[in-house]
Image 1 (cartoon, helix red, strand yellow):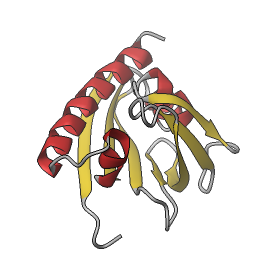
Image 2 (image 1 turned 180 degrees about the vertical axis):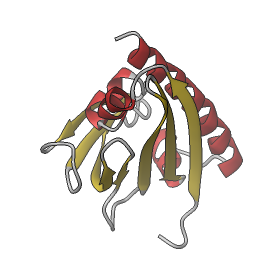
Image 3 (image 1 turned 30 degrees about the vertical axis):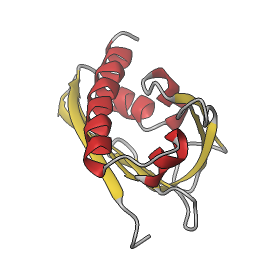
Image 4 (image 1 turned 45 degrees about the vertical axis):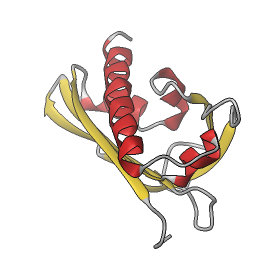
Length: 156
């Protein structure tokens, strides 16, 4: 993994809900299709906890319309953080960190961080794009994701 180029994207937003509710929804990849537009479905092979495997099916492009990515929960601390990462020797590396922090009884700060291998973009669209373009798109998508996540959490 040392010679690969990784794209990093992160965002933070305040949600008007208590930390338990925010964490239970946000930390669970099974809910991702409700706030991440490219996710078709995410299936956990057990309870959300350290070591659980997630099969994430996503629409990357017409060429990769139901791409499967296997992720493992490598860090889990209830009402704090959940980190998911692709296993070693996976074609495309991805790490997803979901962190929450109570601001008050009914306000929670959530932070979403992504690191991913830029070669997945070439796989999806058939040609390479410069890292700065991918970063701009990832940053734009991150803002949309967080707004949608906030809407989901506050209107349920």
